[in-house]
Image (cartoon, rainbow, N blue to C red):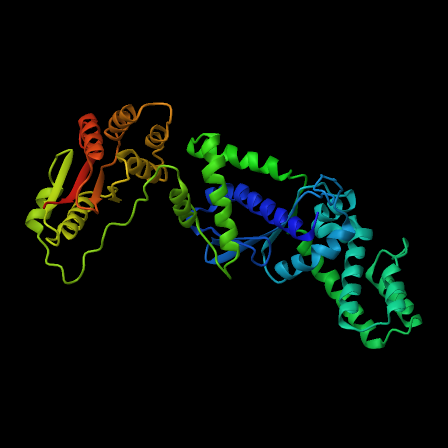
Length: 440
C-alpha cells in the first residue's frame, strides 16, 4: 500500500474515531465544549472549568496494516512511544494542568502500559522504563542539535543503559564518559546532561496526566459503534445513517481540520447535523426588528393574545408582514417565561413534516424527545404522522409558537392540505401556528 493511500486511510480512521468521541464530550461539557481536529494533536478538546480553559489532547493511531491493507496487529512498544508520542505529549502538557490520551487501534506492550499506569511513582515503580524514556529523549535532542559524524552517531544510537543503572546520576556519569570516548564535544554532552535532568523532574507529573486507550478497534468496528450511537440518539434507520448522515458528518470533521485554528461547538455540530438530515428544515432565528421600524402594538398584541390554533398574517409584498410577525413573537415571549418560538422559511419543495421535524429536533435539547421520535418514524403514512404530532405537541407543558414564512408568497396545494390535517389534530393551546403569506 502506498504512503498516500495509507495516509488517507489514517485520516478516515481518525475522523471516524473523532465522531465516536464527540457524543460523550458534548454530553458532559455542553455549550462550553470546543473541538479542534488536527490542532496541536489529532484532536484537541477544550472546555471551561470555572474561569480557566482546560484542554485534552488526543493522539489517534489506526490499526497496523501491511502494504496490501491487510491487518497486521502488533503492540506499540515503549521505544515507539518515545520516538513518536512522548515529544509531542511533553510539549502539550509541560507547565499546565491539561491531559493527553493516546488512542491505539492495536494493543500496547506491558512496559509501556506499566510506566504510564505508574504515573507520579514511575521513578520508583518502573525505574528502568522511566530512565529509558529520559535518556532516549535527551539523546535524541542532542543528536538533532549537533552535527555528529555518521559512524559515531550509529554507535550513540546503539548504546543501551546497563541494567545496573537505575538513577539519573549513574546514567549521566556513564553516558558522558561513553560520549567523551567517542570524541563528542563538551557542548553536546552538556546539552544531554541538562535535558535528562530537566526531563527527570517534569516527566512524573506528565506521565500522571497521560491515559491510554488500546485495542480501540478497526475503522469498521468504530464506524458501527458510531452508527449505533446515531441510531439510539436520533432514532434513524441504519440505511439513512450510512448513506446520508455518517458520510456527511465525517466530511464535516475533515473540512474543519483543513481550516487553521478552527474549532466548533455542539451548536455548530447540530447545525451541520440538521443541514445533512434527510428530511428536516433548519429552524432559524426570527428576523430582528430594525430601529427604524414603526411598531403596531395594537395589532401585534391582539394577534399574540389570540387563543387560535392557527393565525394567518396576510398582506401585499412590502406591507410589513415580517416585522409584524416579529412583534408578535416578542409579545408572545413576554407573556410568560419559558415560551419557545421557532421560525422556518417555507419553499415549494418543503413538506410540513420536514418543518415539524426541525422543531422536534430543537425540542429534544429541552428534554422533550417524544415529538422527534414520532417525526422520524418512516413506517407510518405521512398523514398519520401529522395527526400523531398534532396530538403530541398539543400536550406540551410549555407554550410553543411556530412562525411559518412562505418566502415565495404562498404555499402549494399539498402543503395547505398538510396544514389542514395538522391543525385539525391540535387541541388546547400548547402549540400555535402563525402563517405569513402574501396576497396578490
